[in-house]
Amino acid sequence: IHPSIHPSIHPSIHPPIHRSIHPSIHPRTLSNMGNNASTDGMKLVQAVSDGNTERVLRLVRRDPGLLRMQREGASVLHLVCARLQHSMLQQLCPLLASLHAPEIAAKVVNHRNGCGKTALMLLVTRACETPLSYATSSEQEPRHHDPSSSDVVCSINALVALAADVTKLDTKGQNLLHMACRGTQAESVAAVVARLLELPLDVSARSQDNLTPLDWALLGKHDVATKLLEARRALASEPEARWRISQRLLGTEYVWRSTCARLASNSLACVDRI
Image 1 (tube, rainbow, N blue to C red):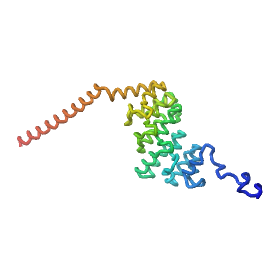
Image 2: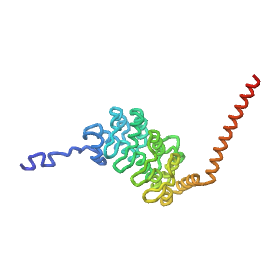
Image 3: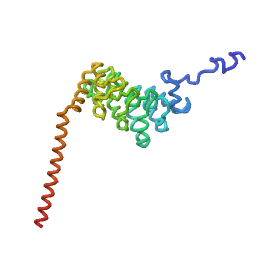
Image 4: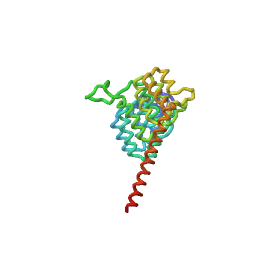
């Protein structure tokens, strides 16, 4: 059979199936988000890539199971975090919490992609390689904003509120502080590190390459992040700081015991008078 006659042989007669798919979307991702390329999974990935928040929310409300896809590859939250779609992420997280039980929502947000990263890990890594941004406001210029109100900090808060496990390590033994300090944007690194230090993370943890978050901050010349990490490490290791904390606790216990003894003696006095 001549190639120009049989459609399965000649490529010009048999067009590719995914011709209309966005070029930045890998076909493997599409297969992981749905049963085939014509399902809502493909439409959801396309909407995330286009930054169409309204369509993403509409698709998820119509089929909440799209957020529960945990096959090999990236989930919807991974795709949103990789593209730093902050507004979309901050609306997806409460929607996920409202559509699914808490244990299912926690399982979705803590799912690892093919590289062993959770959505929060991916967000921290990408954000610290990008200049710090803020939600658009007509009242204030970005330079007047507090870093704690930046887009990335609000996105971290949204994932943490969704029961993201902040203590997870990646395949190299790095925690979130390692990933943040390896970034290239000093302002973004400082804002993320300041937020992460409010979480139960070990500032002295060493990864498989025997480096701590402080080592990465020094290598990257992130002065603000370095000072924050040094202050936290000094507070955790300083004997005098531990002594002050213990004395404060002892003082609280003494006041409590004194109050109990005084109340008991007053009660006995009242009984005697009666």
